[in-house]
Image (tube, rainbow, N blue to C red; front, top):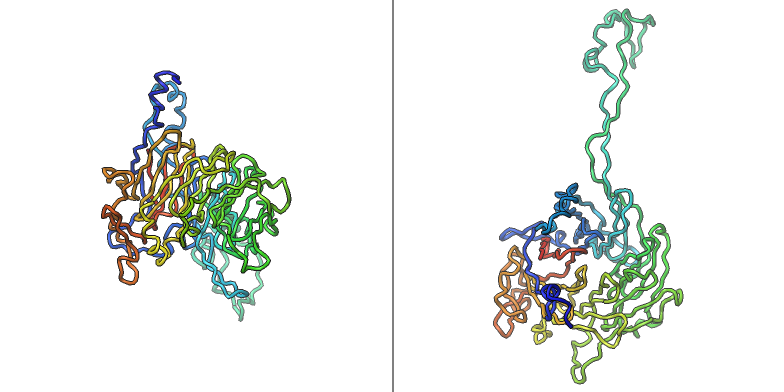
Length: 510
């Protein structure tokens, strides 16, 4: 089929050309030999719907907000830009906006359990009246925050005229003589002369309150608590703008943003006898368009699509997405690496992206026979599963994300690496990048061959054995398991990525 030479030049037979990624900026860059504090490690990243704001959460319970600055450079010149026949060569640039303490460490006395302040998830809500709204969650509690600019008011003029009074002494120029008065205890006076002083009293000035500079204020409007017995792993806003869900290992609750005192349990997979428990919920997300639909993944590698219109308790799924196991491939690690750590809907709601330990899978919600595409993230680690199990790395929960146009997907790996894959028809794009100022400096290697470790100062070898935290592949490249890129987010409208490498936030564009 030929649609014309111009279109063929834009979209060749093999799909879109691979993107060339470039470094944009970094926040919280580490210096050589710098010791990283545990509380500063980033644990959540999220762009808002427009992409003009970015929020990060860390293990210290703080939420940091960034705002886009480059889009303001050309405001007011739109008509001039529309007349131009070439695009503006710019990319998203952000600056630090504000931060606030979202969660504090707590202690559950009934269960003798410490509750970490670490932020597990951040989700933006619809903005209103110029205020930014977002949800942040730790293991047990979700909070609804409103961030807006407030004018700082100060008292400008006092009611004492500085020209007439000096300190706490008598009024200058007054005809009342204090030397002739006789004072008694507690400040009394025996001279009862109440005559007005000559010349009258000095002028009295009422205090004047004036508004000075604008300050950003973060206010916690609601706290949604006491609804989860197990750790919260997901929160997701509904497209109706009124409700959201929160999920833990065994239950999914539906909340109204305006009501924090109660929630509705819509999914419950807890068996009558906990010894019969075979799978847990690992991630949940609302459909981006249909407010009655949501999907959740499990530790068995299954994704269930449910429709809340069917019943109040959604114990029956509408569709089940599962990849059939190859015969003879089962091993001790099969169930562990099949566990899905994250799912995301594409913007159009037609496709879902899931991340298990070794692969990314793209699903069509109209076809549940299997994934439409499978991307190998770090297949070279398969021979090292035993070592990964011993040092608990096999339980790492990597996130995934899709581009706004749905043409590409991305996820993280070890040694602060992340991978970008093309998912359009015929695309063979598979780019490996590292979280540094030169993300593509090792692109001379083949896309299937992993990269060497960065030698980051943050690398810590536990128990003094390099074998516990590092591995060699067939090509002799070293991989460090202690430096892992778990959290990343794709800008909703542009080819721009935000990645968390320990306590540093790296941003790239293509």
